[in-house]
Image (cartoon, rainbow, N blue to C red):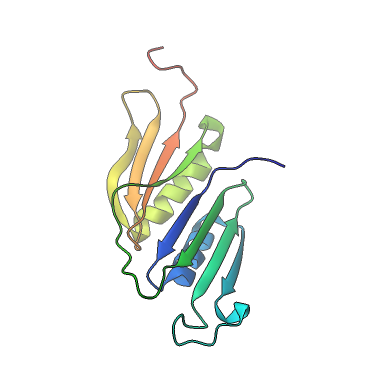
Length: 143
């Protein structure tokens, strides 16, 4: 078994829309399980609500998400982000992702060469999630 690190996101009822957007940008296969699939008939939680979703991309990125508990308000904070990293060989791919997120969201940090030598940018997507993009220069810091 291979160990992976991924992000699990919780949304206030629009998980399917968010995960379909991420799939449209990153590609891959999206599996969605609703509360109805598990026998829930609603109204709380609603049968069409997302109990669990999983996106697996060709690059091996794994993103999971669900609709939050119906009685709880979901509050987005600045305590997490999703990071997409690549080497100089992956520059076109990472830039393509950045451009797609930037077109739909808000650019927090333009994708530019940084003091540590890498290219870095950050975008907040239409769902309030911060995405960091880093293209490694291949050089050690200070080199």
